[in-house]
Length: 131
Image 1 (cartoon, rainbow, N blue to C red):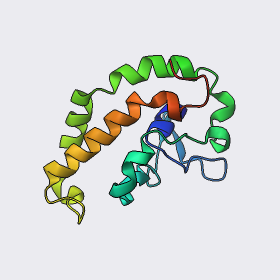
Image 2 (cartoon, rainbow, N blue to C red):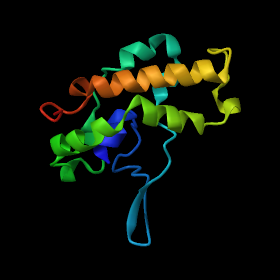
Image 3 (spheres, rainbow, N blue to C red):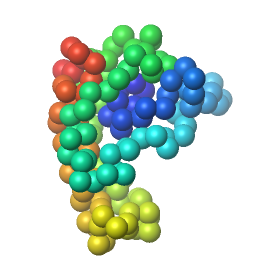
């Protein structure tokens, strides 16, 4: 969970506001409104691909002792094919903004950014965590 939050740059899963829900004995991550905040400023999005994630305030940081193992398991799953499939599920109306002429252009920008971010994970995971 910490790896995922670091990847999507979720700054809002602290002890003050954990945004976690236990339902049917399973833990669910909820309220991702503070994730992907790079998309509020596309001209500066490139700089965010390698921005370090500040995990010290993350509610699950004390339990995240296997980040390198999580990275080895999760990073290979974040492929351009998976990201393309997920981005295709986002309604076009949500993707059209002043920054992009079409939803497909927005999808391409997200694909590029998220692909670069996973490729640069040694920069954003806590020191020594990336495989």
